[in-house]
Amino acid sequence: MVQTIGLILLCSPLAVPFGLGAFWLLGTLVRAYARSRHAWLASVLLLPHIASKVLDRIVDACLAGNLLDAAMLSLPLVSIVVALKLLLNVHDSAQDDGQSKTLP
Image 1 (cartoon, rainbow, N blue to C red):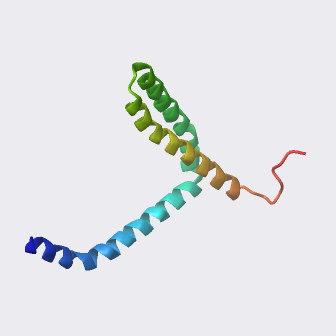
Image 2 (image 1 turned 90 degrees about the vertical axis):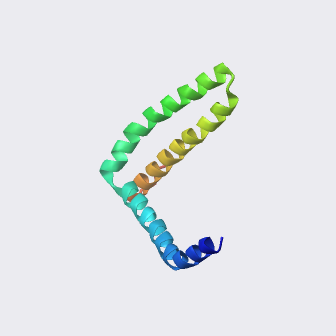
Image 3 (image 1 turned 135 degrees about the vertical axis):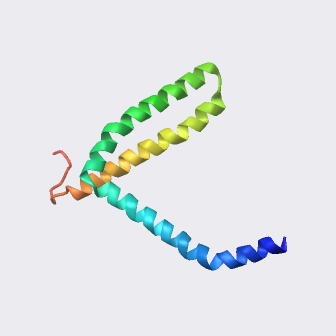
């Protein structure tokens, strides 16, 4: 027990900067991915296909009576929908030319 506590105290000064650096790096990668035109196009083409497959698995689980499996599969479906919405919002804001997008 004493060795474990000593090891934690020894590694903690390094773990905090590495943890913050990893969090910053992940945020930068996500932001760059969302602003990339090729990544946006690939995601918008691929994610609806994956979402339909997940939705098929949810329907199959519901028909089989596995409600727990259906509930667990709903989390990836919701995350795909949110990711698509965020990608579309970033793409719209990057392409915004100052004109109103509302129809008359």
